[in-house]
Structure formats: structure tokens, C-alpha cells
Length: 233
Image (cartoon, rainbow, N blue to C red; front, side):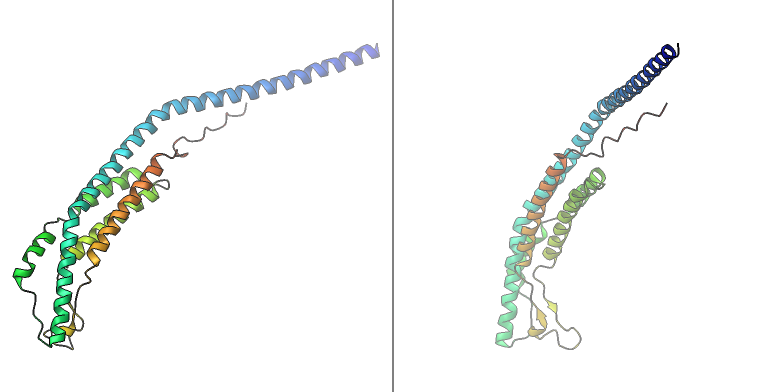
């Protein structure tokens, strides 16, 4: 009798343990299934949003490239004219110093055409506006490199325009101590500054294109948030 009761108890306990193990396994499987279903549903929901977001970013990046490249092409003849103008002024100052003559500006007839070429280029306002759009679309950790690259393009464009505005001008080395009539007191411009900055601008545009392509072709893990675990029962 005792043996039968013991066997029954052992069998009942084993059955209960098996039922518990099976229940735990079933619950775990159910949780995994719920998690997989939630992730699938979330991906299906966020997928089109991510695609739309990437499409908008691509359009903004492409517009920035178009605007920057167009302004840079227009700046090419201006940069070349500024180089010629700055070199002419440099040679003019050196000649005045060698001949020990008082300083005078280059004749207008010599500089009129160069001045027209340099001043024909407008301010890079459209680049600044397009850079702001890049900032709006790519703000965040993942897009930091793209934003910085766009800002670099804008900075080089502004610097180039400043050099063009200053083309053909000398600057007094010491405006207080020496007469402005002394050619040795006039610092001539560096003829290579405008063409060098023009090259730097083109390189900055190439760098932006590379950063933008890397960003668009990289899956952003932050787009799809982590699915929280199922609550304990």
C-alpha cells in the first residue's frame, strides 16, 4: 500500500514537473512569437517611413550639390581674373619700389575688365540656404559628418567671395608710422589666394558628395526602435 502510494506520488510529481516545464516552454515560445510579430509589424510600419525619409534626404543633398557646383563653375572665371589682377598689383608695387616712386594705383584702363569679371559673381546665398536644408534633414549623430561637410563647402565659398571682393587691393603695413605714398608700406595681395580657394571649394564639394553617399547607403540602426519585452505573467 505504501509502495503504491509512493509510486503514485512520484508519478504525480513527475507529471506536475513535466507540465510546469512544458508550460514554461510554451510561455517562452509564445513570448518569442509575440516579439517576432511585433518586430515584423513595426518594421512593416516604419519601413515606408524610413524610405520616404531617405528619399527626402537624397533630394536635399542633391540640391545642395547642384547649387554648390553651379556657383563654383561661375566662380572659375572670376578666380582667374582675380589672380591676374592681384599679380598685376604685386608687380606694380615691386616696380614702384625699385624705381623709388610714390605709390599710385594701377590705371583704371588696366583693371576695368578684370574688375568686371571679378564682380560678376554674386554672393553664395543659395549655398547657405541649401546648407541649412541639409542641416534640417541630417541633424543628429548619424548625419554629423554630412552637416559638417556642407558647412565646409559654405565656408570655402564665403572665403572665396571675400578674396574676390578684395582683389587688386593693397593693405597698409603700418598706417600710422609711414606715409601711404611709400610703396614699401603697401602689402600687395597674394595672386594665388583666389585660385587656391577655388580648388579648396571644389575639393570640399567632392568631400560632401562622398559623405552624403556614405550616409544614404548606411542603414541607421536608430530608425527602428528596440521592441520592449513582453510583460511577465
